[in-house]
Length: 278
Image (cartoon, rainbow, N blue to C red; front, top):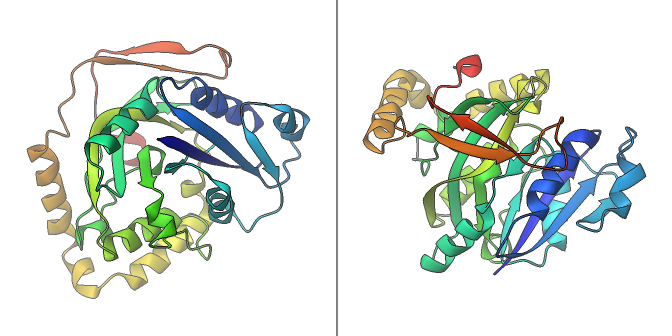
């Protein structure tokens, strides 16, 4: 079971090095890491084309989602995912995903769990995924794409690529299309990935705000009127699924201060609340 991981890249040289390292040291799986760089001028091209751990393609694109689509069309793996430059995989992540797909061969999409860290690698919170529910997904998106894995048939048989008209909210509409097509989705209750809250993430920018307004205009009126009870329904579901409970744990990642060796962080008091975005 081969993995194809695609990373869209543009002017993120230092973060990209950490991302690549976190994919390259995955054990027990066959994989390829495709990096789609849009022509970075920050020093990335001084080293990326020579990094033998990746298949690097340097070409202009029509934004992040177009870059991912291009990478997926070049991919040869059975299980596909994308990982942004400021995201990483935890040790053993892909092996856990492979075992889950083998145990559930009818699964099209797997959502796993995420550790959110700051720019220094320190713990902010954890995010545990849930399979999105119709209607509720319009008011709460319960997954992060750095811990989303798809079977190749999602692309080959169903043709569910990213809609490149979106620059920031493409994740939502990609998952929503998979829901509309009734693809088989499951949750792997395992921390596979790390999302770095750098303070400069794309989804905090002005275009993301504009696209959120467009999404609100597309949302059925009755859902907007029932936003509060739908959010409460989601929170009740989180409680019932044990999302808010997490024992102390540790995670190992690459940091800007340690780009060549993973650093282990201990989390004595885990929280699922992302206070800076709550």
